[in-house]
Length: 123
Image 1 (tube, rainbow, N blue to C red):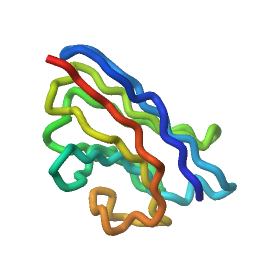
Image 2 (tube, rainbow, N blue to C red):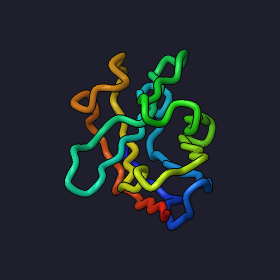
Image 3 (cartoon, helix red, strand yellow):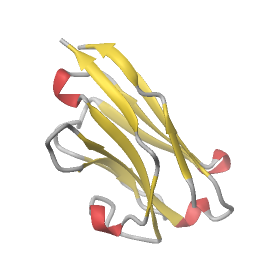
Image 4 (cartoon, rainbow, N blue to C red):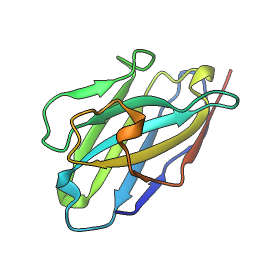
């Protein structure tokens, strides 16, 4: 599967952005999908995601209540709605896919990665 992320940009603190990730392939619904981010000098971290079978959406502690993950299997697309953005949310955001994985938050589960989209939050 190939992934194409978009929607990043520059926004002031308190603002909002919506990231999109379009996937190619006919078996999109069989993939666990996640958003990760990597800030300068830091390790890549899990932001939010959902397993291939649906069910609960998982979020990292730092974004709970502010970011919302959604998935549209008909469009082969996942989204990340980011509200109340903070300067510490500044990072490159990556979407990723893992075939039929139950470990939504584990980075090593993901085999396919998009190219990343830069989000910059100014104070």
